[in-house]
Image 1 (cartoon, rainbow, N blue to C red):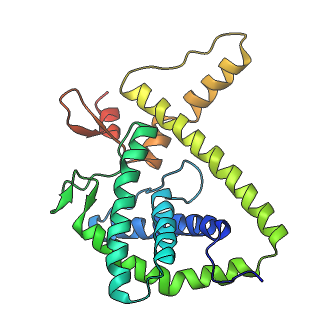
Image 2: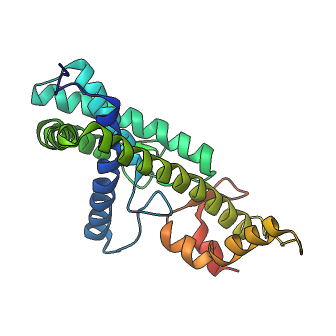
Image 3: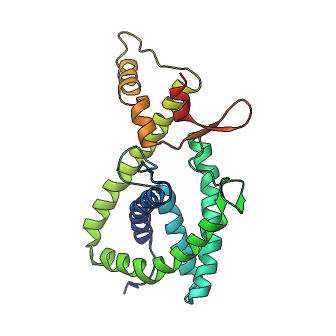
Length: 237
């Protein structure tokens, strides 16, 4: 008989998906309350997803489940450590994939290379308690009620969509960066269908307005090694 409390790959998938959505909501509200600015905090070009929260949340639950951590203090400490570690690694990972930094905590006290900070590490600790004690049991209950065949079909469909979403996001950000930073624009080759389609998408869909709205906090280092917001470079041109 299958252990209902066991964390399986199916559970991890739903943790990632749900935490990506919840994380986006929390991040958007936090940004509005602290800065008065309502802007996109998405990590993918399509859908309400902030994958950093998805990855960190899934990693947290998986690690805490393996450790069989129950006490609130132990949960907080473990979440503080694992959440900070996951966020730090993801910061480098996303920068390597996209060529841009999505966040920088250098404006906060007690930060490490601008990639993690004490206050957000504390948030990870608190979040771990909420995840393990309240959200995880609810997600597990829902996932366990879905028939395996139906669940597999739904998961496969969502997984394929997320992969495509991720690839399109990389393509869009690279196009946006090349246009603004390096002044490179794809010029369609007349008579070449694939070249014309690529030009149509890059020039008409990945517009500066759309990309700066979806990813307003993308940063890149200038020739002096200083980080600048790509959106500010649009205004200067």
